[in-house]
Amino acid sequence: MSFTIAISRERIPFKKNKLLWLLLLSFAAIWINTLVGTTDLNNWMIENTLTVLFLVFIVTTFKKYQFSDLSYLLMCIYLCLHVYGSKYTYAENNFGYWLKEYTHSSRNYYDRIVHFSFGFLLAYPMRELFLKWLKYPKLVAWILPIEITLSISALYELVEWAVADIFFKAQGDAYLGTQGDIWDAQKDIFMAFLGALVSTTIVSAIKKIFAIYENDYNLK
Image 1 (cartoon, helix red, strand yellow):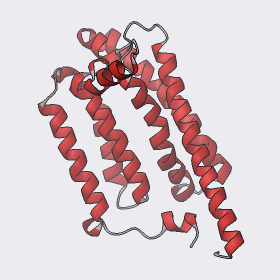
Image 2: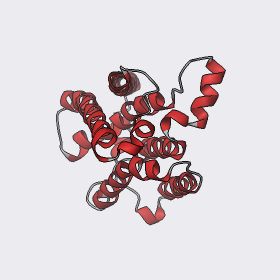
Image 3: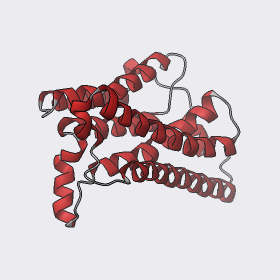
């Protein structure tokens, strides 16, 4: 059985899919914890607007289009990282402070981690969407996740600017979390781009290795 077939076989119904139930319950527990323990409720609500939209997309498309379990796992990890960042605000994140102390850096890098994770964790689900749902050519499905990651990252930085400078000025500093870096937006975009590039490269390398293995051992 090839790698491609293994990840695109007929899906297990949700009620019988133990992994999806585990992911759902785990995310719900983490999400509730971030709400109960948040230090800034207004910022939590702003940050989680995109979380709600993401979940609406997953739920409303589930019956007609379903991702592989691997894609749902990657999306769940990303959402958990994102909502955990909303608990304390990204610039004041506890894990980021621990990492800052451990690495002796001058910055709380949790926001950079999440931006990198956006590209790294979501490029594969996007690739699957283009290949499985939209039937795009393989090369296009490889390039589009990288391009879309760049586009969405740039759009997100514009949204951040609008939220911080136009709609919710009181939450501006907490929401932006620039930490005094005038190039924060550009660096965030680059981290997302780098994550998508690394992810798609790894997937391509794995697929080539499996293809060589199948050819050598006549497993097709």
